[in-house]
Amino acid sequence: MEKLVSRYIESFMTELVSKNPGETEFHQAVGEVVKSLAPYIEMNPHIMGQKILERMAEAERIVIFRVPWVDDAGDIQINRGFRVQMNSAIGPYKGGLRFHPSVNLSIMKFLAFEQTFKNALTTLPMGGAKGGSDFNPRGRSDAEVMRFCQSFMTELYRHIGPDTDVPAGDIGVGGREIGYLFGQYKRLTDSFTGALTGKGLNWGGSLLRPEATGYGLCYFAEQMLATRGEGFNGRTVVVSGAGNVAQYAAQKAMRLGAKVVTLSDSDGFIYDPDGLDEDKMAYVFQLKNFFRGRIKEYAQKYPSAQYFPGQKPWGIACDIALPCATQNEIGKADAESLLAGGCKCVAEGANMPSTPEAIQVFQSAGILYSPGKASNAGGVATSGLEMSQNSMRLHWTKEEVDNNLRKIMSDIHEACCKYGTEADGSVNYVKGANIAAFMKVAGAMMDQGAV
Ligand code: NDP
Image (cartoon, rainbow, N blue to C red; front, side):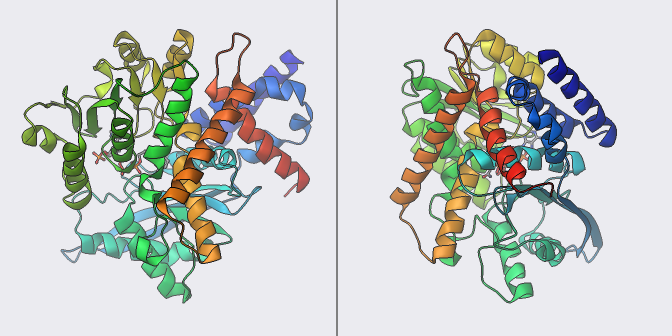
């Protein structure tokens, strides 16, 4: 059976690559999942006959559209919009919108595929989707961002809705963008519904949604560390990114007693050997969220910090690494640098930040390593809680949402341990997360027939 499954997976991957040429991120995300599913398929060979993998890797629907808008100089700009509705077996499509110049179909499909698994892990009824545009909000005025968002929603609104597809934020889409998108959705549909999450608190948003991905990441990492009798207290933490996920991951790690020494953006990273504190964090929130500044300004404000242009933070000695910027930001050499610097735990806040070669380095060294689909699921989980509050027309307290978030992250950790514990007692979080999520989605797909 082992040989049969391995041949099946090989031919499945060959066909996937030939059907989706050039989509390297999508091949990478699917390849990682199917590799770890092999032992499960050996025990459940009907998965092959039911063509579950083939169905999961084919989006239920993909919409690609023109987004024309007028910039402040009066010139017409054209961007490309996407929505990949990957899988609705366990609930309405759900997944963020990314505005970044690198956005293309491969990135959208990899993110939507990952999202299907992540959403299944949250235990909430949400299918998987992702969307966005190659629009670059960097350097654009608020008025330009608003006009872009309105044009983007003028097409997207036909494809979403509270029971159909509920987008949220991702890279380049935060509270400001969700506000403009929601305003236009409401205007076009003449309805005030929970068709987007990450909304403002005064108009249907949930407390703790902005914090949820970063906080959830730290709750998950706490559980990983606890399997080895460890915790955040007194540990040195390296964080990449300086956006939504990085900010709240850094804040929570710091509040759990760790010394957070780095933050980064696509231009470079800052190293502050004294560590972040509440005042420095408040400065970072202001700098990034209100002034939309660059992380190098941190080193100008705090002389204890050094700025390293054009570099990533993985060469800094640490106990724990929290990659929170973007896909493939840790390659093999970066992974080796982390190990050389004493890193014992890598918990992913970003989606697929480690390349397959980097994951191999972490797993061979036997350090704690968790894939984003497990450790960053707190964001979409809290979006699910926002949907519940919207449906019930209720508003939960911060404590209620935080307790729910902690419980969900703990349940995801338990599922990873249940399906990922190896004979030597170590936990393979990649295998555990993939099998737990796959079982749920595949089961629902088989129940619902060939649709
Ligand atoms: P933000 O836009 O708020 O922040 C992104 C950060 O990453 C910025 O500091 C940005 O720097 C940096 N970054 C982006 N692209 C690159 C790149 N190519 N190289 C180096 N740095 C880069 O996004 P989020 O914090 O929301 O998202 C970060 C990651 O977390 C993404 O992988 C996202 O998919 C994932 N995620 C987000 C969730 C959420 O709730 N927001 C939920 C789950 C996962 P710069 O300003 O220079 O672009």
